[in-house]
Every structure is written in structure tokens, then in C-alpha cells.
Image (cartoon, rainbow, N blue to C red; front, top):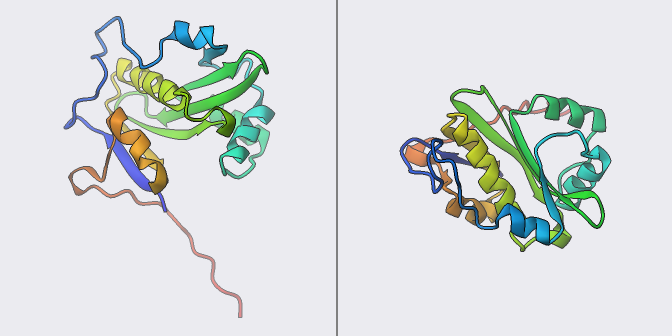
Length: 176
């Protein structure tokens, strides 16, 4: 079951307004780099097979690399973390949307061997800030119930004002 979280105009985000030129993140870019982690915002040096391995490691299904590439080419904003020692992605998140009002965050993953050191929060803080700087204030995501607690401190609320997300699901007819 997936739950829907939204940052809406009714709740003040925990980030500075888009007009602010500096933003305080929980882990600075400099601190990340000193630990061997480098932030990336394009697919130019992202190895899709390595990204797919991270997806699989966190329980996502393996995806066709050509479809991943196509999805990333249609992505509004993305952020991923490359680990210097391996040159592989260890954290990733992306957002799609209309580029004006709405965005949905997808594929938030952190390699299990790098979880618990702030990389998930690192990508989410910066991705949200990127969207807010574009003037996009209606930011939604889908999350498994077991990780809702991760998103709440970032400003997300489940079912704000009674709003419920719905997903199209065509059920297969049982064969006789």
C-alpha cells in the first residue's frame, strides 16, 4: 500500500523562500565532498545499470535501462550522489511535473550499505529546494507506510485536508 504525502501551500516548508540565495542543509556540500560524496543533477555520468542495482537493492523491481533513460529525460529535477571510491550512485531522487504548479517525487533510494548517514535527507532537501526555486509549491510523493516518518520532518503530511491519492489499477479477469 502506498500513502501520498504533499507539501502544500497550507503548510510552511522548512526551507527558505525561493528568493533566499543561501540555504542551510543538514549536511553541507563541502562536508559531503570531504566524505567522498559528490552531488549530481544530470544523467551525463550516471551509469543506469548501477542505478538499477540500487533500485533492486532497496526492493524495487529491476527496470529496463532504456526505459530508465527515457524516464530520466522526462524528469523535471533530479539529484543523485556519487561515491568517489566506487564511482557509483549511492542515493537518488527525481521529480516530474508540469514545471509550473505541481511536481511528484519518485524513486527516492539510498543504497542499503549507505543508509543512516544522511544521504536520503541530502537528496530530498536539495530536490525540494530546486522545485521551490522554480516556483513549484505543490509537491507530492508516494511512500510505503514504513518510511512515512522519514518524510514528515521534511515538510510532508499524509492526506492533507482529507485529500486521498488514487492510483489506476486495471484488475485482470480471472480465467475459468
